[in-house]
Amino acid sequence: MDITQYQKDRAAELKIFRQEYTELKNNYDRLLNQAIFDQRDDLVVQILEVNAQIAEHVRDFVGQAQGKFDPQTISDLTQEIIRYQREYEEVKSSRDRKKTFQKILNKQTHQLYEVRNEFNFFLSLLLSAIAFIVLMIFVTPSTPLISVQEFQSPSTSIQEMNEVMGGMMRVLSRNV
Image (cartoon, rainbow, N blue to C red; front, side, top):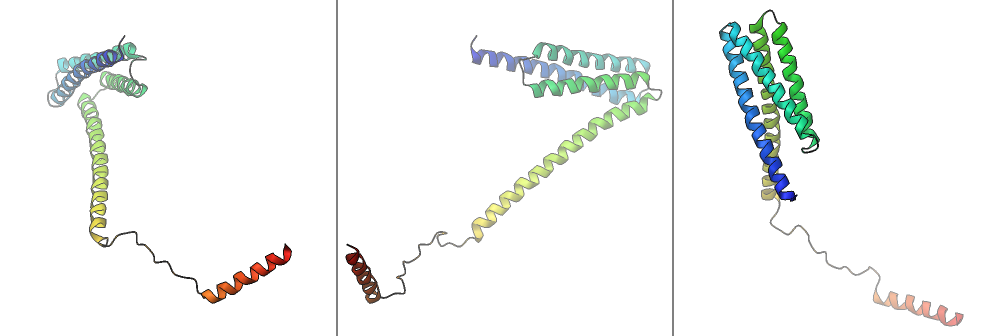
């Protein structure tokens, strides 16, 4: 099998899954919002059905995807299954369903808030780094950063050097 075709098939499979998953999640959120304001039993049943559909959809995909997708994707989806199963149990066993629905929506809102704060932090860090670099560009002098030092002659004179060399030559000639 051609590698590029395999990657295309895998990407298409993941795209289809994501689209279906997003539709189910949007439907779930819509039903939760509706159930907070309208206390009907049929909405609770619909919420439980959609919750079960989401968990089943993710479970089926994870079962088929073993070895096809990176472990992080599978791990994230497994966490999603666990989360939806917990929410299902909370709704099913809850006496005050309105508070339970609000709690579920607040968890999602809180997660979005945390992600947004993290994004803002890294964005401000990036903008600060850019501002620092621009500042350093304008602050550095216009002269070259590397300057060539002039060669300075040693403090001994040429006459002294000749005397030292002559003495060395005499010592070497005696040893020969």
